[in-house]
Length: 509
Image (cartoon, rainbow, N blue to C red; front, side):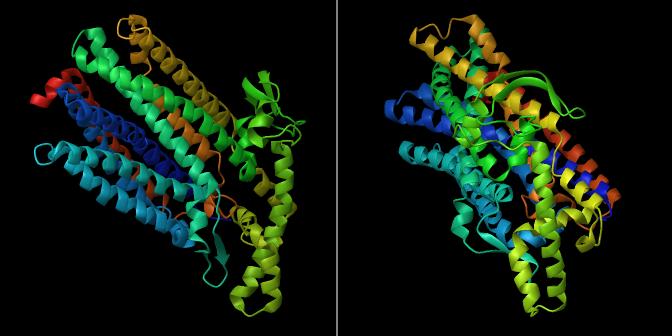
């Protein structure tokens, strides 16, 4: 058995907290950078100074968010060495390259253009400054691309293989890693969610100004940009999220089944559970309201392909675990004699299931001779808790549908020229401010918690990926991170509230 299970849980908790906190800043960076680019484009085209003031004001809020996002992102990367050393050793050749490129994008390209954006107003021509603004937005989005390529590989490991001589994953085709369909779908879905976050942020703050009857010229123009940009982004999130669901069913069937509380295989096409109360004990979903055929169409794009249920997936995994035991046995022999022809042939035949064999390490050191009870335990571990995934997914989708309603209503009111006078809509826009962050955080819960017990899907179990540290050491670093991030949270909230209340007047101080 793997010692220090509490170390695994504490390391997971620490990384989850730091990742979720860091992701509070990422979506707003992505969304505001594009909105600022749009506003400055209008300024250059029209020459109206109100648009320049809008760029500077929203740019000030962008800068506060950007700095804290960088500060929180740094600590995440350090954890790959401090808490997840075996993971870094095992898949470092694959994971390290996109992570390094992301670092270059974030700390060189973005840093360069963010400096030019803030300090280049009096030193660059209007067109040159506009180019820097758009390059900053492009760099921010490309930074997200590379980290999502790395994360997408963890969800769908392509372009690499396990080398029994080095005992590591080795790259076979870097292009496959870059153009991994899961990574590309995650990228466009994530940045679209970021655009929605930026649009809701601008819309809400502008609505606040109009309700206060302050800075109305800036607020009205900002609302117009936010409504149009937000509507396009909200529609994109739904469409691109649908593609992510389809791809998840290709290589993460357990995640899809758990999200839907689909305990047993349903007759095709499967229905979509709109809402209900999943019961882990009885393996039923109480009070379920279902939409016929919808899930089958989303996940399989067909009317005759069934979706496998949780129970059936567990039974199927037992076969792969037994195959993984054979791969592990052959690997053990190859470690003693790498020229053993029979062991090479056996390992090649069962290599694809080695990760499933490694699931047994949590229950026994003697993987090759695992008992049926241990195989069953390993198979059962492949099922994440259903309720967190079930409700997280539905709250996220509910927020997404609300954003479409919000921006469609705003767009309609803009056409009717009543957008700035409907106080009920302005209040609704203010109340909507926290929802994009709730949806984004829950999206990551679905993506990452739904992958458990894998740190790399089908390749490396999370329980094997940690560093050789004690629970006390992880608790110490966890307490330090919580303290550090709490301080940053206070600073972020204080600065944001301070400069939102001051409005554009803050630019004069």
